[in-house]
Amino acid sequence: MASRFESQKRDAKEKAQERARKRSARKAVREAESRKRQIVVRYAEDGTKIGDDGFLMTPARNRLHQTYNAVFVWMVVTFLAAAVCIIQSFFQNQTITDWELVWVGGNMFNGFTVAGLLRIEALYLLFLTALCLFTNMKGMAWLYDGGPKKPVQVTFLLMLIPSIVYFAVSLFVVGIPEPASAISIVLAMLIFVFVPPVENERNSLKRVPVAKTVVKH
Image 1 (cartoon, rainbow, N blue to C red):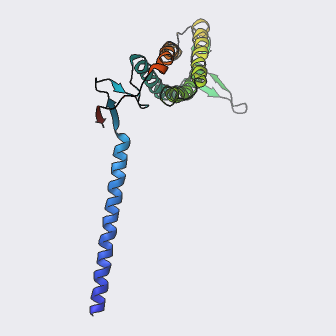
Image 2: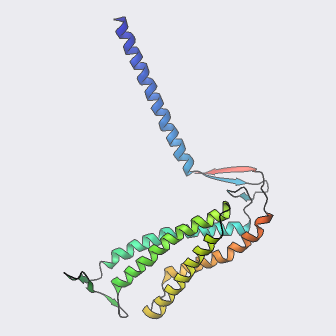
Image 3: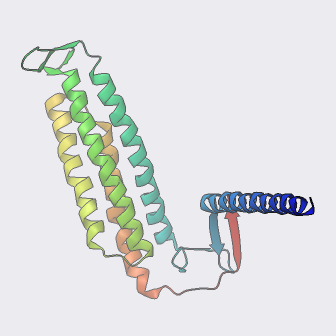
């Protein structure tokens, strides 16, 4: 009888320990997720923000950082806009042939099918989505991690030149001043203008001690 009682007591203790371990594991997971959502901002003694690389965020560095943030936001916008264009292209009164599987008819604009224009727009927007992702990644890597500059130049040209061509074709052939390409041209030119000042001051930057840390959730 005593042996059975001891066994039950031991089982209860093991279950209690197991529940405690699970609670600790769940707490650790919640804390890890909370840390992921946290934004730690460090400041120098004079109140100037310190970048992730330990150097002061000068006005030039801050401008370029905000530009790459805008590129990331633009990536999200272009992806959603591409999805809208694809969906809308199926509601333009077109019909598809039985054997050739070719879309015919439908709404027209200046001699072009609206559905066709929407599909071309969706392809361009998806191109921008992928390009903006790489532009943000390579730009931030060059700004903070000492990454190579060539990817920054390549992504800048890939954003600028196709957008100029697409805007010109849209304006002079189709008769529409396409807005996505115009915004992309502006973002590309901002990168072109903001990169040289950051590069010029790079050798003069010095690491400074952190005087204050602010954690934002």
